[in-house]
Amino acid sequence: MPPHRRSAARAVVLTGLALLAVACRDTTNLPAPFFTNAVDTVSLFALRGTALTLPSAYTVEGAQPVQTFQTTAFDFAFDFDSLGAPALFPTGAIHLGLLSGLQRSTAAFDAIKLAPTGGYVFDKPLVLDTGTVVLVRSRPTLCSFGATLSVYAKLRVLGVDSTARSLRFEILVDQNCGYRGLEPGLPKQ
Image (cartoon, rainbow, N blue to C red; front, side, top):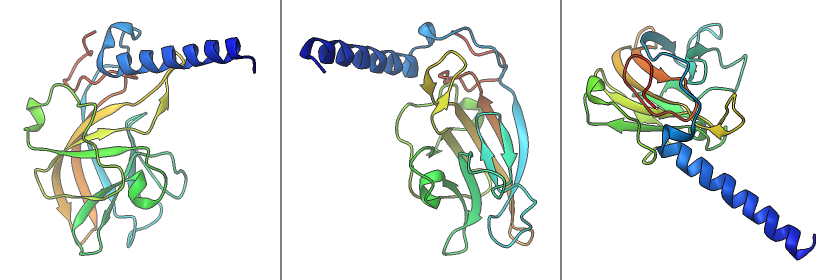
């Protein structure tokens, strides 16, 4: 490739990266939000020791529990770790690539208004207990407007049933690509 075309291509890439960086922290360049944020209650069942037909993972894009035997397009799965503790596993912790991330929060579920852009763990399980609050960053998602960004969520563990090998939690997902607002209602621009 001639030097002038290489420079032009480099400029386009850098401009695209700059737009993505801005979109990750500034919603003014994103299309108006369409999806309304709402809190939902979800149950997941352990990856091991439960029926394959039960959902054991969750996809943030689409905000729904999924069965892992049908798809690998999910952001975290539930299982018990090597010590028998209940845990959420981001994709990297189960060798599906370092795509999604989890972060324990010390803030109360209702107090979290905006998802952070950093601090997520991609390759290790996050041990849970009743009341644990977790922030979630989805795997990169191709948005309807052409950019590839993450979708963000917050969840609070409502209970773990070791006998049934299940986890019950409430979750709020901002399905508006690139938005990080974690309050009920339509996210603000």
